[in-house]
Image (tube, rainbow, N blue to C red; front, top):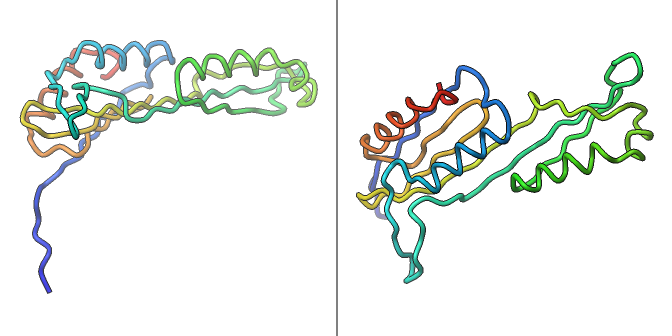
Length: 167
């Protein structure tokens, strides 16, 4: 029988944020800015003859929290809505907040508790050296995975240091 031979060394690094990213608008601006601005100088590439973007979303999820308060401002119920896009998050939030039948059934008024919302977007990036790595933005941390060249992490860290929301 043959032995397993290590082919590569991949790393993961995490930056815990001092405070959560304020809201979905700030989060979306940050992630969209990386995709459109390509601050890490990622490069386009082909997979089986199909052109790939230098930076692209590979996964995303957004969860809104709505609580229902009675006349004494006590929480009597809650609803969470998970969407696969920012537009879906916003649409779900509006629909749930406007649903009078649901509010009546739960027995309170709908209140969006934005500090309990969660956001996550994973970007797939192709480095000039040929490596593909991932950067996952969450509301409370940023995670860089599947990289081996320390210059990749250094470039991301230098960029992140310029973003107050990533302190």
